[in-house]
Image: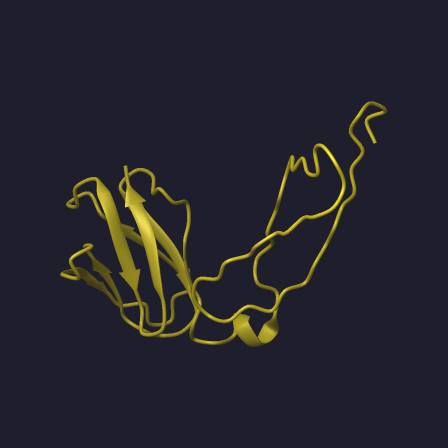
Length: 127
């Protein structure tokens, strides 16, 4: 509580999501005037042991990438492909026995790309 017009409440929720992209919608109702003032919203990483050990996890970080280096994490021994938005394969990456992968992408022009594994697709930006 700030002592002024603001008072806050921390709300925590555990949510089970399916693989892939998901949308989270917040809905507020009731009261008069200002109903909501969100100062910060955080999302923690997956902590479910079932998801963490499946072969369906793929994450680019940071995004946009930095220093012409694509860094991504993945569970599993799948090959991963970098595609342009037309779906053309620009690079194939072997990830056998690797969880953290660094790839030099200095040969790619700035823009939006896709990182695709067997079960997941992650967008990333080269600034």
